[in-house]
Image (cartoon, rainbow, N blue to C red):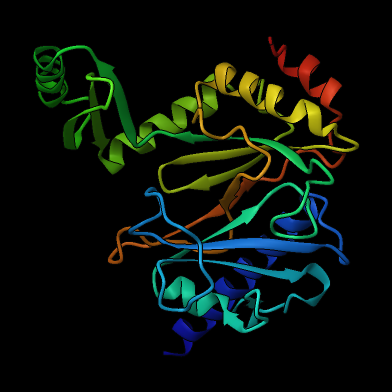
Length: 281
């Protein structure tokens, strides 16, 4: 019993250190307001309207960095009506913790600074568009018959444009294999970046100093092409999962999002990042 309590206390301290160092790595300053979105993990990939109501599937919250409590168990965020919401409790209840990466003082105000460029590498999914139902069915059977991919689920739906969207989910063992391959393949390009490991892949960040807001989207699009990462991760208001909190889509097997590598101390300039990664526009 005593050993379990000691391990629990160590884990809580680790989570707190990961969370706070992550914020500092992004250049968040004490006087700045940080904006968070809590989305129930059963809805995290579905279009939901954020709300501050406690029983809703999603909520938007905020707090000044200098006011954040040091212990994970004590952190409370605020609704627009300044009602406190306990962050760990919500995460325990199944809410994923996301944060707006770039800086704006008000949740719906103009952005004032680029904190980082980043990508989302999701190795769990296979998503393909096919022209006919016959092509979709053939591709479905190919994937199911391929033991390497370890497909756990697969579906085909028709789009509004009349094409067929195939969506397959890989098994955990295959995802672990692909994680190792990704890090090895891109080891030179991602040297110096901060790498956050998620259940299904990686969030990779390049902290930025004195960045131009006008250059943010073009660089994000170039990063998507370079790494074949999630094409939706291009807008200034994008939110990302925060390390130190759990991914709970499978309540029986929660996954702690954590920083695998902190990267270099000095942030990049956008010009340096373009040159470093040989980005094309």
